[in-house]
Length: 537
Image (tube, rainbow, N blue to C red; front, side):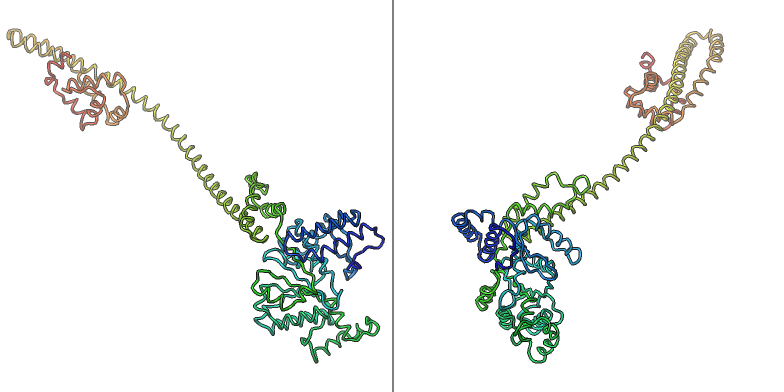
């Protein structure tokens, strides 16, 4: 395996680094849990410190990946993790642009897994059979996305058979087509990718062909007779140009198959058929590259993934800036994911749910804000209307003040007229009494009174005319006042008193003014009905 590394002209440190890296990949990637992998790291570190003078203190810190030399990736070269991440980032952007989104975040654990997968895909054709990679891990760890990316970068075409064990003929037909593509005239680089969800049983026939391919590159009885002869005819020209000394066309066909066909199995150890499949097909472990390192992420990587998934959340200002509590939101999201014990896929899912829920809430708040804004605009229009009505009311108030003054003057005239009338009426009564007492002077007094009445009559007529000119609107305006002016109060008090009213409150005055025909009652009032007490008051 070390011959695959580009070590020409390198020092001993590079050689030992390749040795340590390859050892980790061969042994460490097969180990099941982090406890066993940590123990292997400790053993390797102790060996490096004790026997290799510390040359391996940094071994494995850099990734080794296939270097692209023309159409084939034949050697592995040393690349720093930073540079390797840049290469993966460029390839990921190209894949998502040309094919489909993968949803991969290049955190440290993902980069490590991709490097292991990169090395495994570069190991094709190194043995007697087709290279096989067995990836073991829980569902949702990103194995399908990872193989899609690395296969795309290395120029492989992925073939995923239909449900294995349900439709055996269709499945075997697809597998045969993949073998023909890889070894026939097309000579395409093919990855036969099998996932556990495609397995409906042990599928002995399918795995029998896979075992034959892993062992020797031979397809067994899958391609026989005329089909094999047709395949020989397709590659005959290439065989004549590329055959090795003493190599038959059948051996050349097997070599082409080994070079271009890669088998990849992605299995969940909790799958009900996992034990049956692995026990019945030991070559999956003995002749395959095993990657059992698709474990969970560290908290730092989980926070990076959550932050990326939540970065699309709209900020408070309506833009795409981060929320002020973005860090705390990421922490809570990771805590929720860790508490469930689910795989990495569900961290991305719960983060997207957070983002979708927040966007929905933000949009609802935006709609509420728009509705409230429209309400405020209406209130503003209403405020302007109220201001206009207030100005009109002030103009009406000024007009009312003028009318109040006019009414006050009229009431004063009425008051004066009533006072004069009362005075003359008293004098008439006195004269009448004197007339009765003094019959002899009645004619003379009568004449005198008549002359005096002739002078008073215009005043009475004027008073009647003034009272008659009062309209009901004037009385309504007076009644609308909270408290009357003093002059109006005095006049109404006198009227109520003369007309026999005992209640002199403002409410009594308003009731008096609201009575039907109050003006006619005043005009038709008989002054002789005024009581003595009222006269005295």
